[in-house]
Length: 248
Image (cartoon, rainbow, N blue to C red; front, side, top):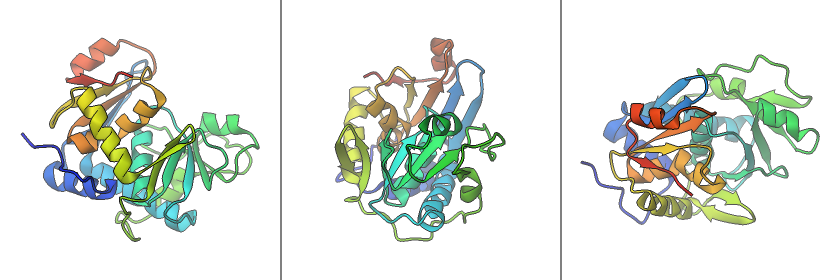
């Protein structure tokens, strides 16, 4: 069985590359809608591809530089994991709920709720296949899906540093190194080890819900099942062979 990655922790992009080389085709991120049964699965290869495309869009299309802050408004969903991957690859920091940011990224519902209070805002599709948004977007909001899909599959800019900002919440911020160390601690708290499978529901605290979306399974060399909506979570846990549960 593989061992957890050794510390000091490196950056998330490098961890994703290690994961792709070690077990690229194996499931890394699984999303299940408990109400509808919708299920989407991403391998390490798929996640690295999505990370490169999103990071390229952040740097090229939206002109963000390492250290930029992204106000992120996404539910517990596989897109949360891909945008963590893309932002950290580009060296940008995610701030859940932040409106006064260099870029605001939201699903359609959240974008509509932001009204005119946000700066430059882009919307992310929650379609199971990641297809572009077909509904009418609020004035001034563009579809990030279109910008992301047009980007190359390989990341074109300088790699991120472990000292760059990665995450911020309630006035506190963490670098990539710090957030990955924090994630390693939560993996230990939840009893998640290499090869394990973490189940995360919307009952997890906000910080834990974001950590568990990507940082925790990356550092622990495990996989994660993100469960949205309402339904029989116990059946999902059994069906997805969860070995640990994220509890706040």
